[in-house]
Amino acid sequence: MKKYALIVALLPCIAVGKSIKDKEFGTAVVKEVTSIYDGDTFRVNIKGWPNIVGERISIRVKGVDTPEIRGQCEKEKKLARKAKQHTVSLLRSAKKIELRNMQRGKYFRILANVYIDGKSLTDSLIKAKLARPYDGGKRQGWCK
Image 1 (tube, helix red, strand yellow):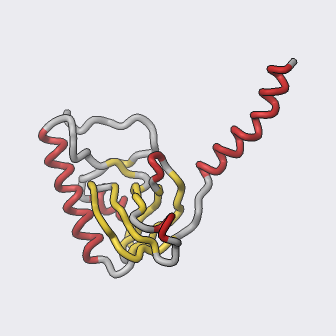
Image 2 (cartoon, one colour):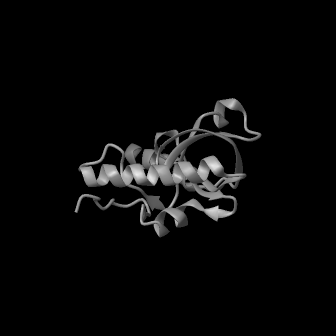
């Protein structure tokens, strides 16, 4: 009986935790890009947010997977450098960078649809063949 009561007591906590993780938090405007790690991950300062949550915060581009800088093979590493350069070029020349449909992801990163001067970074990377669509499932390798 005690086990049953404990399970019943914990179910709302599990449901709330999942709903917070999956909740979207609207839109923010980037004040400054502070660093770019690879084609789909970079750090920013967010305009109007307190420093404790909006300074040098890591952003992961939602809906896309780019090759990894520390990839499994030379082909992946080369593609990763190209994807990073593509993202660097777009972010550095941007007049306005928006983070839309934000969610909290792993490693305290923000997952967001990134729009640069009104255009989707996800779409740009995929169109340039520097990324693949990604829904959070198992990633495909880049070395084949």
